[in-house]
Length: 198
Image (spheres, one colour):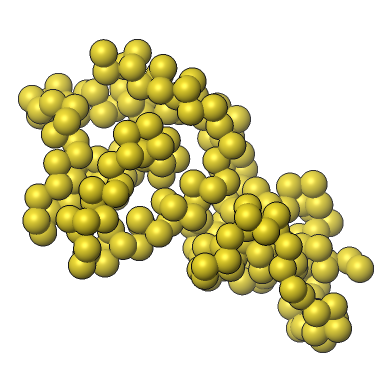
């Protein structure tokens, strides 16, 4: 049924980001009624998405839903959605390069501000840690922050200290949810981190 696979994948990825549903744990399986899909007014959009992205539905939806978790079918057939996916693909195709480049930006920041690597993760009350400010300022990407967190596990400390901070709470959830889709060899990125900062 044309468009049904795209619809099913879209719901599974969207639920992963917005609910307790775990896309990886359930291998993207989700209960969807084909008859209700047939009656949907936006069915045409899912047909179009499936035609364009049949082989890469999951990455297409992940790349767009990480930007806007409320993205609907109509917005996902736009030029902007295609641009988001293209940029995301490029970033992932050269993820090691991008990671090293952004670590270089962090190193420059440390040098310019005469602070240590450990200072990046200091979490004072009512103040975002420097590494998180760098994400919010778009100096580093969400991908770099996630990889660093995989290696250094600093988000647990932030969760405790920024318990009532709505900005951190939103990103903390996004980091945990997005992390599930990272199929990378952590040891390679750990080596890059050491190369830059040791």
